[in-house]
Length: 477
Image (cartoon, rainbow, N blue to C red; front, side, top):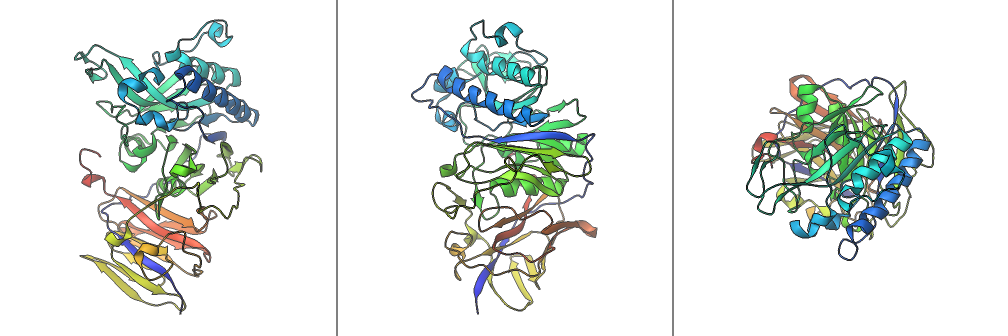
């Protein structure tokens, strides 16, 4: 008998709440950029690094506008490269940008190029001009600096650091007229000592002329309750922009799994723009709604890529084959340059599943038990199924998995009693998403959530319901 699948149990406490999918005010066209930044912060000046990426942004904005896009989203660290995060606060400071107050815009004189622009105002000036020239909403992320007097207490930012500046990882939004209409400062930093978090979480929402109010979050924020879920549950915001520099982790937390699962559970629209650096495991951008993926890209050899789709109306649609989900079928997907992190599955109870006829089995971890009859039931925790090369847990969800059994029927369900968020997550051996409609996300009485295969599944590397217990976080971390 073939031994292909291992059932892996992951223990988290979470809860769930079903809300109806949001109906957009009117159809609009969105663009997200999977962007491979240029420049070297160690050997080039800030003007050189920022300048070449701003020029690339301009070309992408022009291209998106020519395809009818109403809004375009760029990734985290796209203007400075991710290596900025490895610099000290003072060394990184020349690359950080100052921004005027909300409702400001660059003068036409600056846009015409007849006036010298200070290095620390390059991003505001150029992006304000690009947005106005192309009549498009532009969302970007960049390191922000707010100068202050050491030790002084400020109303907005708290006590000024000893080095005389507040430094944030910030997202900014420009409207079609080039007006700065929103700013969000990242709440949950991830190995970014050059930045600090704001004293209070930014709950930033911006409105558009196509009738959608967007919430804002950045990268690691998506794993936490604030800011996005506060906006969702308390203010009814169901559309979000998401600049990120996400690092893939198998079996349940690659970028595209996280993006799709987050949007599906909430019935939300997510415009996710990721940094493209495959050697670090950073790939995967897309446009999602409550049904799943609308359009995405996730390929090590894609380089910079523009993903464009219409959202709303009778049917979501991709605008052109060239910009739609035409991902390379490279057989080197598992090879370099696609780096990958791996969850240590030995921490969880597991059992081997035998391919063939349906069987009934049980698996427990402490007081948590799962019961399997080619449908999966999990009382209060998370269950997952991953493909393995052999009987060892260490072989699961790895490049050595060459043969994967076809799954003819599957139901994975959990009665999540203390609920916030449960991400339905599925990934194929080729590290791609399943077609929309392959697995239905169901909500049952008593807070139970289920993921049910609606067709046979082939070459499926991992399937799971991945939960977050926000009440277990320490100081929101």
